[in-house]
Image 1: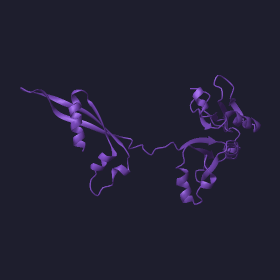
Image 2 (image 1 turned 180 degrees about the vertical axis):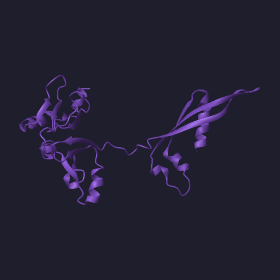
Image 3 (image 1 turned 135 degrees about the vertical axis):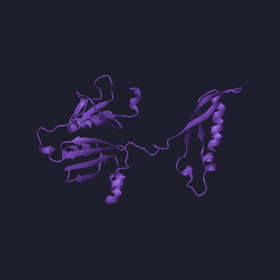
Image 4 (image 1 turned 135 degrees about the horizontal axis):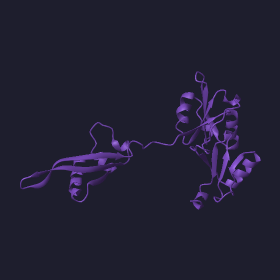
Length: 237
């Protein structure tokens, strides 16, 4: 089948050096090698791109003819088809304060904790998951945790909670780097009213500045958290 596609690309060579051909599921089925896995079960659609070129030789009476052809094939989507954004890691000074903030104030669920005694640090994974869905068995819980989308990983180096000089750079003062994480809520104003009642520190309240209906709060370590409503973002962009 690929030879047939290649010949089609050769015919198009007079007008362009680039030929794109999309292989459909039915065509993949036709090209299947007996007793081998069906490719349609692995990739629903594969895009083949062939870049054609040639080195020319001048032959007497024949003008310039191609002496060699080469082609490049790329399968779009094959290597990243099941990729996903899984986690963002923040270093925290006091896990008790951070866990209280992200669970009680922001409503996240602690998915799993990992302790590393020899290296003296712990990891806490949080996300917006139903606690009833968390597997009880650790062998099931760990892969489940790492298969959740957009989780927050809090890293605690033991002893930092007792060190008065310890603090983490939130990225929003020079030298600037990391900016913030974002939390989508049904109503920014109602969410922020509750945050105020709980004593949460604000960087920007919903009606501050030119971008109305958008807020920024800080967690116990000073990291910025954007509070937004998906539908309202249309008016800001």
